[in-house]
Length: 633
Image 1 (tube, rainbow, N blue to C red):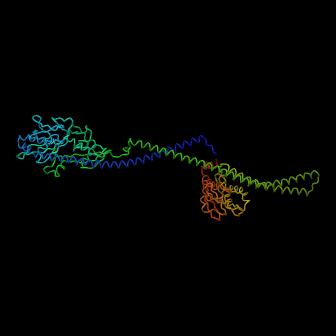
Image 2 (cartoon, rainbow, N blue to C red):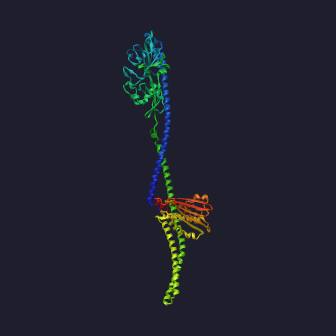
Image 3 (tube, helix red, strand yellow):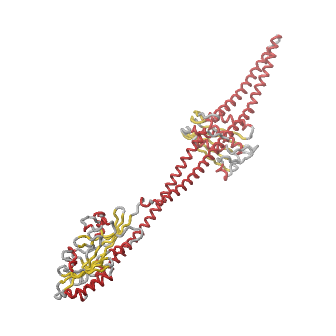
């Protein structure tokens, strides 16, 4: 069992917190981008629907106002053709009472009528009927005013017979001042001819357009800005705050031309359409009295405005805000965002916990694997110790026996000296035994010294991280010397073929363990007990910076379906028979990570297996840390 320090736990907690923050930030960003995109697309669709609805509203308002205007124009023609009005035009003052009665009846039936008057050729009111709320009042005596200077009189008195004059919409003026509260007026006038065909006067109808304006706003879509009514000069008549209305009557330049010049330029130039300026889209249509009074403007009965010869036009304008990313953010959507972020936070927390749990499990797995590798390595050394001890037993035993014999001979020679019975032949025999005995002892002790030296180098390399420079031939010699005891007890021959002069700079212990594992793996897995065969350990230089190591056996080979799995940890075909499944996994990790090389396997069943390693002459610079990670616990 492994003990984890408090510092490591704190580091893991910090890492988990950072992982949670990263996942939460990424998840929140993804949610906000997707949500914002969906809102923006939905807003674009909704904006398109709003623009279509607003365009329909402007068309409907144009038709509605045009229909009202056409109806009042027809009524005005009927009034002008009345007998009482015609008699007044011919100078019959007695018809005044009948004309007042006719006018009163008309005003009573038409609630939108504010005034109905007959003015003579000098602009003097002859008959005037006024609506004051529900009351109908006839003006008499001094209440009758002279309107000869008012624009609607001067512009209509000279019109051809049957032509209807349509005035601009303005505020009603009484005795030279704007009437309070405001009364928005539209005036229709028609010239009355006398007996000689000259202009005898005009019948003028004042229409209170408040109801028109109310109908205008009822035409607009729900939850939209008010429809605006703008005259040909760009002055607002309806649809904006009162301080911006009727600027021409108060000498104020409160016009659309000043407020939205680019939009107004296109609105003024076209009959209908839409134009964008800033964050607003202006959708507009045009109402022309000439179009609604008569299809042919020049024909009798057509409508005109004679002021400087300009055609009278009204623009009906609807405003729809354009769509922007900022416009999609609304306060009522904040709870949705907060709930979504809480969900993202919960998912991020679960995800980070799962990721850290997997990481801890992986860490434990790697530590367990490292421990098993260490045990395997020590077991390998233990096997080497047993083999070396068995191998050392013969030369050391021979040396001990020779030494014992020489000791007995020396004791006998000592007794001969004391008794004085030493012959020349005896002395020569003793010297011969000494020469043969010491030679035999030297040979056996050198053999023991070589075995111990090889084992010592292998053991030191495998139990340290020391990086050193060495020749490949020397390392192979040490490994083979260590392996000989294992092969001596089997019928398999270990054959070495060394054709390398490179000096390597790497971890000798790691490379020696690779060679040990490969050779022992070939011996254990490649041959059945009592089977004869050969294992070739060949080394050659591929270049001045690369060496190739081949371990080839003539054993039973590896089935094709298992060749892709031989480097997997704990995979073995000899489970319970001495195989741990770690030998080739350790080899693969060492070769690819520590030694910076490659390993490939070639095998054919009943023919043998060939392991090919290609290694750079110098180990990677960061190998030390990796070596420690694999071998240490």
